[in-house]
Amino acid sequence: MKVIHFGAGNIGRGFIGKLLADANSQMTFADVNQQLIDQLAHKQAYQVHVVGEVHTIEKVQRVNAINSMDPKTVEHIASVDMVTTAVGPQVLEKIAATLAKGILLRIELENTKPLNIIACENMVRGTSQLKLHVLAHIPEFLRSWVEQHVGFVDSAVDRIVPPMDAANDDPLDVTVETFSEWIVDQTQFVGDIPDISGMELTDNLMAFVERKLFTLNTGHAITAYLGQLAGHKTICDAINDPDIAHIVKSAMQESGQVLIQRYGFDPIKHEQYIEKILSRFANPYLHDDVERVGRQPMRKLSSEDRLIKPLLGTFEYQLPNHNLIIGIAAALHFRCETDPQAQEMARSIDEKGLTKTVEQLCQLADYPQIVEAISHEYHQMNK
Image: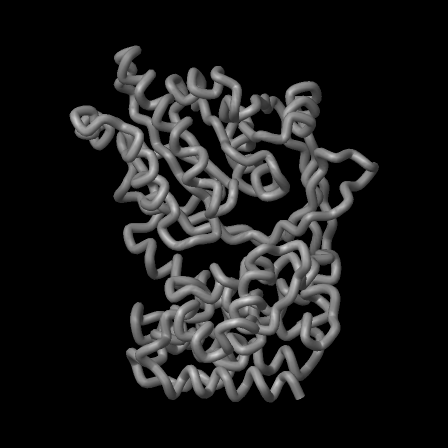
């Protein structure tokens, strides 16, 4: 199986790229970081440090690399069996034109082998959004060919891969946690589904997307935002603060009740899932900065993301939400001089006021009592 993977950063190398390489794929990384690409193309191998109670080192071998701006990237897309991404939600639109050029070249070359594209991003149905961007670059009369020969497969991904100084000063080495989960929508593939160890198939992806979004992502973000307010530097330090741990766990339980109502999850198993995630946050071998996890607060406070979407679910099922509200208030306090979204959010609060910012940013104008509750918690935190 030939694969091109967009995004050769820590997540790309430490998670999806590793699974694909382990599956004996003919694996090529594509990235705009020329120095990183040169190193990968030269060594064609790197080490993944899997840290937990036991520290193991796993070597990834026989990989290649190309600059994603290189015209040869389009030729790769025209011939591969699969395209995967780990570039970040905001970059998907930027690579769509390149993907479209590759698909158009496939058509020109009369390559009718199935091509499956999987966006492995921290977002809801990222591949479906990528598909819209790609189709915008495809002439309308060719879109039926694309529908027939190209599968856009949504997925849910879960692995904590913090940026760290690599062991032995090797810039290609990457550190990851033991846990990983890659769940894909088996109904969206075109042609045969590839056999990749670590890739799980489901016909009910949204249940798993929201389980991860409402649990791992919700808890991770609230830990970061409360952690910064309390002066903690890492997620591990923050979750070991009993006051923070109580709020985070309670918020995850509130969002979990939404999942139990919506998808019929077993309450006992879901509580075990929450405990597992809390233990992952407390992994002392992952030095994950609260500032890194908290970045892009405006995206994380949008109505379809990890804080507001579970909150809206509590309205739907008339469930408690006090700790989710505390987490949202903490997110509004997030400050980071190197994060444009944090800067923009702070300006909005200063210029428009907190109430108007929350109504617009979180799309909560129809819920004045909730906006008031968030505002109350926000000002309590100022004290």
